[in-house]
Image (cartoon, rainbow over the protein chains, first blue to last red):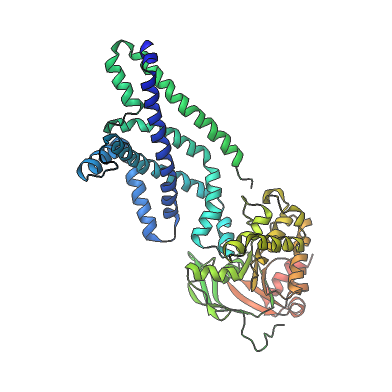
Length: 223
Length: 251
């Protein structure tokens, strides 16, 4: 137990990085996932095809592979850099790219199932007043689709929070990597340290679930 | 009014064919609608009436034939098609008001986004139109809070807000409770009287008699017969139309 108290600053710092990874990847995933969903329902076969291929590859590849590819493939081999001298900045952004690329495939599919809950007549009415396809999607279909899938999007955010631990694989000092380091330093306190980190994740994820559940009820569209 | 004068008809369908899989829903359909004319399409269910209505603004594509609107062939897709649709209002059987928007927003969305009318101006005009269909007091509500008859009147206001050259009505009263049919028909009769070009698919024979310039009788994907209402309802020329009318009017 002492180890947890003594190392609290380190633990909090690690969780702060977890939060940053989650928030940044979450925002990028939402934007990119929406673009992918738009591609997959678009009338242009080329866009539909590209969206389908992307989603099926990323959704069916283990996240560890995606993140290691970003770290080694993009970072080491292709020498993608985000900072001239700070490796931890590079690794943060490389793992963010991996997390976003992966999570956006799931966001896309959740949004697509939301789009399927919007009656076809809504899009027909939008088209018949002269809205273009992008306008129909943005102004009529997506706002209703998102309202229908707020709760599943919350689940994705929870999954993303936990998935940030995979960034440890390329040396990002988030919670999981710090936990492993603390195990090495305080061998006799493994259980308390483990419980401390587990509680840390619950503190992050439980409110997210509650918030999205509440939000889902609030924004539901009456038909 | 069947005579469209010297001017070209607003809509002209020539040799239009449409299939849904093995089903031949429109068979070599020829039809013109003149400016200011009110054409009511009647006939048995499954006869292709709704499809006929929906091909005019290309919510359904056609397999062969040509459709011209205002002298130009219907554009296939993209912005040109969107522009055409903004000139052809459409009122659906199931209203299809935008569920996540207020009544006033339903009416102003098209003008502000398609025509780029300033918001205040669109809202002023929107309120005038809601006033005209008798829903102004509900402007801040959402569609689900309104009765079917009210929703359909809002849908008509939404179509009018685009200042369309024509409005298509696809069974506008079929989903309504009986006591709400009249309020919608009253609004439509008013429009007809004001000279709006209308194509109306309906089972309301009273409306057809009262408001139509021409009745088109459709069955099995073909236009079987057309004529002025007085003529058609009293002396239908075809066996098929006589049979249809006897079934719906005799009791």
